[in-house]
Length: 256
Image 1 (tube, helix red, strand yellow):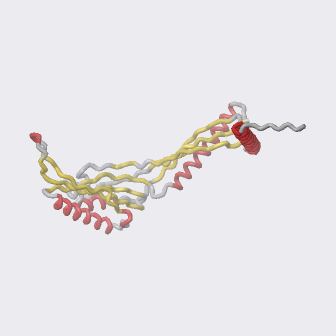
Image 2 (cartoon, one colour):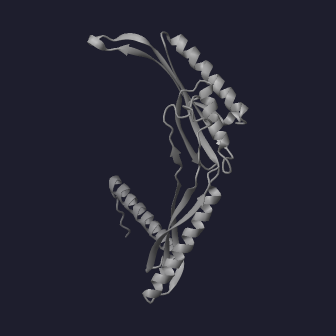
Image 3 (cartoon, helix red, strand yellow):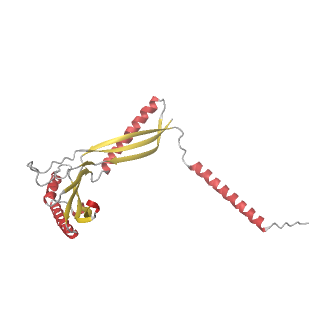
């Protein structure tokens, strides 16, 4: 005689959910086991070595910031005067062979000036401030163009020299050279250290890098590149010097 059991609906749903969860766990465990089997085994014994590579080179790009500070009784006046001088400066710079894509307005502002004496906020006038950033390329052999632009800009109305700094138009090749040096030094240090410990150096497990190139700013005091150089004559002498491109590498080796 066949016996039939009628389970409550809620119990059937609960059992079905538990069974589904069990199946999912089995599948996940199987996937993890397979992945662990086919994934490369990381060596248990490793050594981490850091090294630095350095390449010295002469910068080929100068960045100049020249500006015009104008004061006057009305906002319209200072805007017109400032724009007139800035346009003269830009025209001069273009005549020096600087491409228009290397000339950019980096600052423009007009604001009132106040008299705060005796607790008043009376507007006494206005100031306009405009700054142009100029990139001068191909200066690795001579910085004459940089000097000429500094003097010519002041002759055409600039009364602020925000600064000059030297850098590289494309430093990728220099970074690659520094990187190769760092890796070679890391290998050499690892071999020596392993030999001293009576171990053999194995394959490279991982490599991490941090590289940088820091331009050296050359700041000019206000008036240093003014048209009237106090009888000294000529353009201000500008030297680009040389800079270091540095690459820092950390290499992890297997040891046996």
